[in-house]
Image (tube, rainbow, N blue to C red; front, side):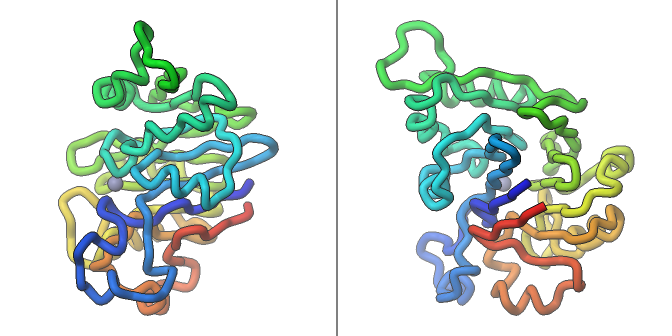
Length: 253
Ligand SMILES: [Zn+2]
């Protein structure tokens, strides 16, 4: 399995438009973060988790020619606003499978009604196949994927476990029985916004405590704000098996 971090930034990305914060002005490519998304590939399958406003740029950078589906964690714009750019995949492959909680599918249908509608479609508008995710294992290609239920303040969010790899973003609260489902995972990705506490995201301490509970072999932090600091400085402060993810980082599992 190959995992590519397409984006590792929080909702505004880094740099933030108009900001003169030192991290936003950094020349280090690892301090430039598009909105969070990962590409997960195994055998001949490739799935994208989330489809934020940087989707087009991310697909070009990853040289992605085919996607077997898009899996959504939740409906916030930094995870969904790139939907119109599924068009090149639709033209080549036909209807694009979406996997999401029923509520998220409903929200996407409201915001992208022209994509979801079945009558009087404007020529060139893409179509999707809706697959509802419940909190139970589901099939992506030939692999059983396990949803991990959590909360982003009061909003339900899904993380996902693909065998030895798990990806959780925008989490603030995860119940004990959901953490149980992560036991034995080799690589865990989890969100860490900044040092200061936040209403709806793990801060760095909460992310590290979460990793400590799950005990993966390695962990990577994502959904990062410029307030967390420079990549290289933060990396030096982390425990030995914990890494700050950065855009275009690839993991082989
Ligand atoms: Zn987000």
